[in-house]
Image 1 (cartoon, rainbow, N blue to C red):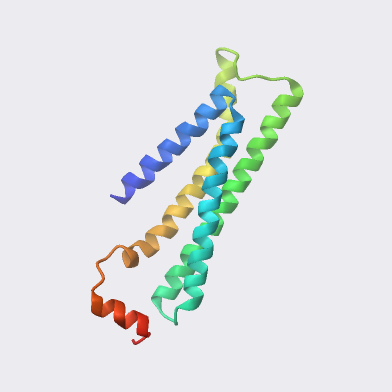
Image 2: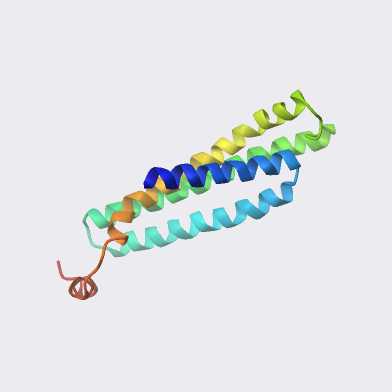
Length: 154
């Protein structure tokens, strides 16, 4: 089940960014990247605060690990977006276009695959962090267990 999430989400993200490159709609690139970054940063903050609030134990370690992975995902995504912006800036400065047929289009896809791979590494890092805490959040919770957790009893 997890591999389907990794592959399906990764493929969707890669195709979306590839279409941005091929259609040269870089405004859409920013419209996609900003919400993704906001999600990574929000999850990192929530997991860090949760990890600091918990007492010592495996839940605390898992939560802090997930926060670290979310920060790592945000950094990978920012680096990928920055490299993509630099490549776009150079292409604009030199008057190059993706709209050419044949090998030029393939060359653009190859050139833009580096920033796309950074963004995909960020996505993978984020999912690995979520995978660590998923066991704790996705299991059924009884009323007795909820009350025990709220009281802070062991």
